[in-house]
Image 1 (cartoon, rainbow, N blue to C red):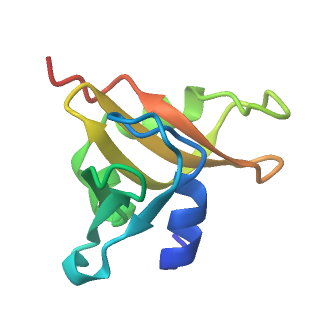
Image 2: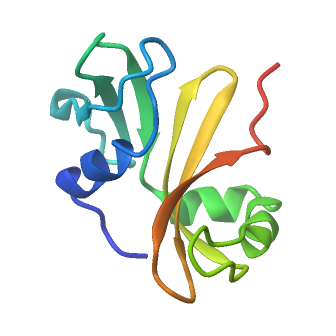
Length: 119
């Protein structure tokens, strides 16, 4: 899996809304970047912070249902089924978001995760 840079992640985060203020301007707090791929995302408007997980190889090995779900996700551009998981966030206790890339046309887009319900 390709290694994502901080600027790549920050750019892709702008495609979702903050759980608190509904803004879409985020940064990565580099003081909290851990070697296991766990980072902290921060809303630049209200300063709400949330975890960003970038080690998807480990996640896919430990979550057996996720690869099956990724095969079923349709691209928002070409409608092809099947995506790769680039990174994921837990925006709130009720909202986890996968950042995926279409295997066919390479379009990158966010997808709400229905496998991580914390209710």
